[in-house]
Amino acid sequence: LTELIEQKAELLQRFIENGEAVPLPGAVELIKSIPSRLPVALCSGALRSDIDPILEQLGIAGAFDVIVTAEDTDKSKPDPAPYCLALKKLGISNPETAIAIEDTPAGIISAKGAGLKVLAVTNSYDRDYLLEADAVTDSLENVTRALLENVVV
Image (tube, rainbow, N blue to C red; front, side, top):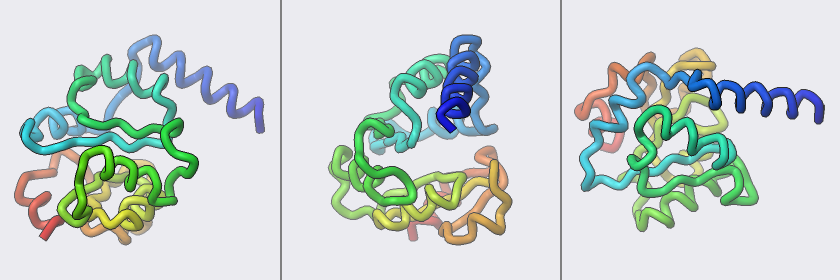
């Protein structure tokens, strides 16, 4: 198991170094379209040392007010701790006014457990595995302001 973990880390590092990290279609555009008056957080189970170079490569390093990574909390998704920490750092006291965009069942459980509304995007999991979310889309390219507002309401 340790060897597999090390191999995964090496592969990820090579992807980062070679600039081969590919975001979900529409992800970068969606992040860049969020008005600066709205707080934005990245809540990931990845290491900060893996996240920062990818954000730089994608040109969105400064897009997040808060970044919560695996090093920031003792518990990981599906526990709500990462999202609770992100909400606290953003100063959001009513989590139902916030939206998490997730692509895994564990992420959905984590965000819902922290009280957030969730928009799920199919990626590694088919729609059938993401039905606990408040809404599901097949692509972030389909996400509109109206869709996000409907998720929160």
